[in-house]
Image (cartoon, rainbow, N blue to C red; front, side):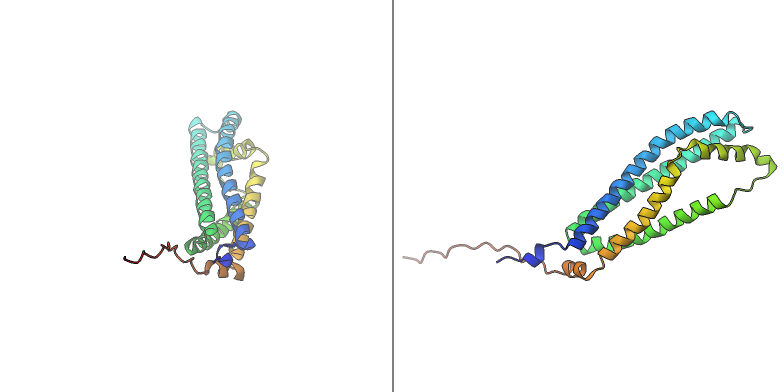
Length: 202
C-alpha cells in the first residue's frame, strides 16, 4: 500500500527550502567578502589618513574599531547562514520544530534588516556633530567612507532589503494551508516484517 500524500512535498514548501538555502549561501558569501574587503579598506584608509591632522593613535583606534566591527558582523552573518541551512534541512524533512524556528528567525531577521536600513538612512541624512578638538576624528571618518569600494555600501543596503523580503516570503510560504496540511500529515506506519506461518507439527 502506498501513501503518496505522505511523501509528496508541496511546491510552496520546496520554494521555501530553496529560498532558505539561497539566503544561507548569500549570508556566508557576504561574511567572506566583508573580510576580504576589510583588508583593502584598511590599507586604503591608512594611506589616506596620512594627509589628515589625526594622530597615529587616533588612526590605530579607528582601524581597530572598524576591524572589530567588521569581524563581528562577518561572524554573525556566518552563523546566520549556517542556521538558515540547518532550518532548510529541517523544513525539507517536514519537522514542525524547524517550521516554528524558521518563523522565529524570520521575525528576528526582518527586525534586524529594518534596523540596519534605518541606521544607514540616519547615518547618511544626519551628519556627525564633532567639536573643534575632534577635527582629526572627523577627517578620519571622511577618509574611512572613501576607503570602502564604491559598491560596498549600496551592496549592504541592497542585501538588507533582500533579507527583509526573503524572510517575509519564507514566513508566508510556511503559513499557507498546503504547507500546514503537509506538516500535519500522519507519520507513515512502521515497517512490520511478515514471516511465513510455521510448519504444522508432524
